Image (cartoon, rainbow, N blue to C red; front, side, top):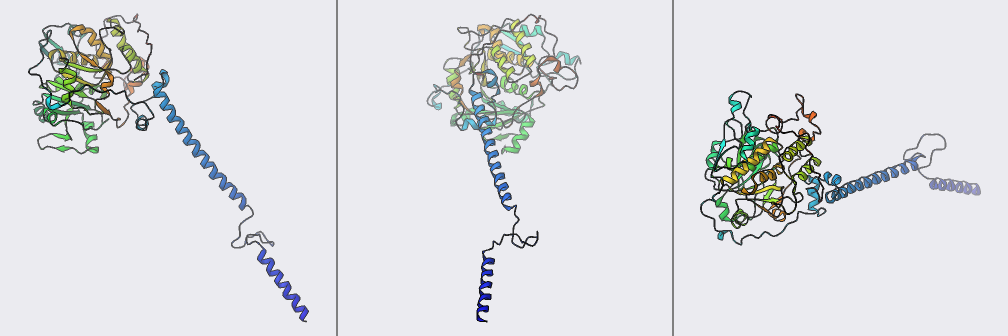
Length: 501
């Protein structure tokens, strides 16, 4: 009995050991049902799939990051490339370019020291006004005869200057009357409170924002003397005013004036053009019409932050050399035909209209710029303009604006032509581009600008009612056909010798 009992105990111990050694995850041998706490036989395969999925996600993420890096490197290379196709891809106004610039991955504008006076308080302001030899009195056309005759529904801001009137405006006389925008009842109206305020402004720093592309940037390094001497005037439309109210604090002075920091906001009601860029040329070129009491003005584009005292700028660019008009030369282009080619590549305006514009200038004798000519360059950087508002300087601005009103809103294409037509009678100072880059800090636009007319490839796209591509209040197509024969005009070849700006 004792031996039998020992065998039973030994048998039970062995069975208990086998149970203890059995994996808790093994399958029940009597059926396909799973016991509580046990996993199926395909569990290892699920682990493999899970690990494979994680690896796949990691590989896809790495590949995606590599593609982004390659795209950024391509963008950097395209901005530095001398190949026209690739350089045209680079958009220097884009947020990507701005980020790359802050990271030091793209070349910064070439800057050089400006030979400024040491102390704004010691700058001597000339007494009186500069006297012009050729134009003594300048008057402006203010009535649109065709509108008065009811040949159209509303007057055009620039009037309907005939080709013969345009030709006559380039022939200088001591007393002249020319078209210069602001035709009566055509728009661009200032509030009475702003009109009253600007009457006291003899020294003006002006800028402009249209269609809500920017917010005002506060100037820096401004002396106390300049703050008291200058009016800082920011001209804008109603869309921009609404945008600024939503993004920047505006101070109301209780007398109808609205301020953002040092800038007095000057609203132009009823913009006269369909194209915001063309509206922006009104304060840029016609400052003497907006602010007739101003003797000196400095214009800067809305996306720029001025970092040089304006009194030192007047001393450097006007008074030191006895100039009345100063503007920087373009970084890349010298000929207007080269600039026109760059505008077409970058889709800055309708390509066939740019060609038509240039053909008219070529027909009228405008040569290609060549080294050793009368001008340093025919193409300016128009974002900074320094002026004394003399009759001759004002006449140049009127004629320049008339070309912008008549042709394309790309004012750099018209500047050199007006200089050519006025010959040596108009003297101006075109200063180095590296000094231009030292005058300001450039900020990106709040959004990219685009309009349907910029993508037009041929004139047929502009025709037809409701196309939405043809400007109805300015530009080519609103006047009588050009009297000259342009069919045989061949534009000069453009040999691109530098990177496109």
